[in-house]
Image 1: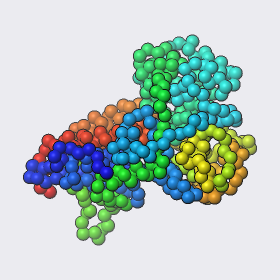
Image 2: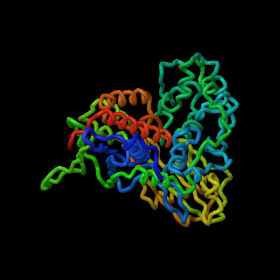
Image 3: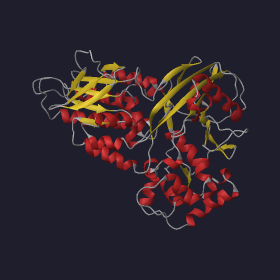
Image 4: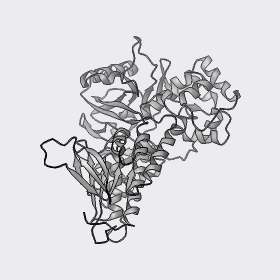
Length: 490
């Protein structure tokens, strides 16, 4: 399978030497960049993908659980954005795309599981009656009163939790907005910023909406009639594998990049966790250009010397850790007829203790291609920013805790026939107040180095389409630069 190609032969050096580009990070952003670089630079270019872990895919991972291929990382993409749809078509995977069933999602609010209401923007209602069933009478009264408050005091961004609590009271953010945001960012409503997490709402306020209710009504997407989400029937790992094949890169797994050094022409990557004292030489990789597609902490470290302004901005992005606990229940186990349940941080079990999970996805109900199997697959998500909670438990204990939550929330007591724990440590960026400004600082600093590009979930969204977009843009930036220069002999 081949992607688009550049001009005849792709970009080459003045003496006929093909360029060498390093992509640091083999997550979906880095693999997209490598795939696109191959298409733009041609078959002669050297594309080297360097990944400190022992596998590719980043937050996309497909495992076998109970004999079923099952995504234990990101499970779906937003189909209303074109990037992943176009990429799957380009890679010959369009016929494997599937969409969720009609089952609706639920939220645990005030100790009761209810359907997530429509007519909201990430939980911010377009009208008070949209969310009234989730709230007490007093909570509903606060929401209904919001349009009559003085206009929102808006200077371009705001702490989301503080703003919502000031305008609506505590119940709406705690019972609805926090669970929804926790499912996307593994963060808290009180730690995230409005502009980065709800850009449509921010634009409505920029344009003069006097209240959050009015802004939500303005920002509500117009229904297109098509499916909202999609995935690959054989797992998103299939997309990862196809990108690796298409990129035809020199793939180096288990190789940390210790430092990034500016050279007269291009860059030098210092490889390995450390150079032993007895080593004859420092392992290095010299390249004409670099795509940096790594989480914020790694980007901060690697850019500290060559691009300190970008490093400083990356250093102000906090990250969260989480785990996905995939459980295969015996065939015939009866789950609720919904796609899953979200939980706010304040929800408690009947005995007053905290739930281990922040969400369950009832995958066998949500995805038709996972129904009618010999097992019933479910996944629980654990971990919030600044509150690791059950993440401290070992894998066996974490499975036990998640199963206990499942019993309490659904009444399903069947013991699992298989389970898998997948931990994601420190790779989930938190889009706090001022995040868009930090991204502008990063991109402005990097713009002075045309042979360097950045990509990844830290920048313009944590979803798969946004990550694909950054990888694609990074590759085009590098290819455009290489097309204008002569490559000296190494």
